[in-house]
Image (cartoon, rainbow, N blue to C red; front, side):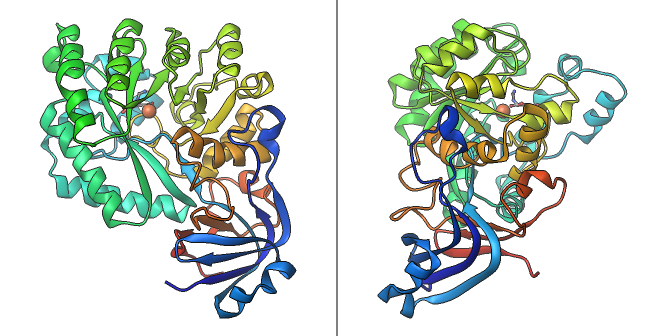
Length: 418
Ligand code: NIG
Ligand code: FE
């Protein structure tokens, strides 16, 4: 791999500064005009104004990569995805367009359970090939690190199949993948009449085995109406934490159930969705270190007007992140730029806030902020270059991919001709 001298960054967004970002600091991008970077191996060795970086001794030996006036920022960190699934649910999409709700479709046997039925039948290789193609698209839209959950298997063999595919992909393709065990996505059909027996199985058998075998770093629960109760979620996440799996939680999406407060109680890394939080939750989250991961792709795709209260969360001082929630039911997008557009237009986040919420804050929520989420000396050379005049244009344009180059650990993994 060559060493790189990267120039031609009309705006270089370094995202240096406080971690995590809260309140006003969320809008601080560490912007350098006419910036440059020096990369050695997979790491950044110098960052600053071009005139200073070009004069460095190491710059002479490095290969030149001149962006010719693009906006360059850290690769996006997508901290909430359900990467491994067997097929789309486009038929349900049509049902919803004609008036059925997500909950009605789920009760009639569609929704998550239909993906579970299909995933159980799918081979590892078909799941891996599908995910690999998706990962190339993530990279093409500027994402360099992502979190991925299990949760469409819900029997031991199938959950293991997903975790195994995730580990293979982490080894075999360039993007870094952080693994989350979501055995508690919904109660599987064979436990429909005895959900607590399923929780017992999770707590006593699967979670300890996943943790001992190092198959995941995080444990997640869908704490909501139609999924797991607050008490069940507490048991599951507490069991995970006792074996070293850091809690994450799907909270306050469809109904207000107390999931956000549970995240605080258990020192979760992240509470995700949060469309239904109330004022008390917002104040409590603002005083905590729980990252509030907002997923506006869901509200957009489901046609719900009620987006999470990003403005109130940020103004109260909560740590806010943005993610795609890439999944076949509620958010079939892998485009972080599209999520930024939704965050700005629908949740009134500024472009600068949205960029911090898509880089440094999600890196913190994945406990990867020592190597990802900002362009600083010692961190991975993970970056995305956009063919725009200013960073404000990244969310401004929507439905079009303006990411022209993505670099992961010093290697170019996506490049578009101008
Ligand atoms: O994050 N909320 C639970 N899980 C997904 C939806 C999954 C599906 O519908 O397949 C979500 O929105
Ligand atoms: Fe999700």
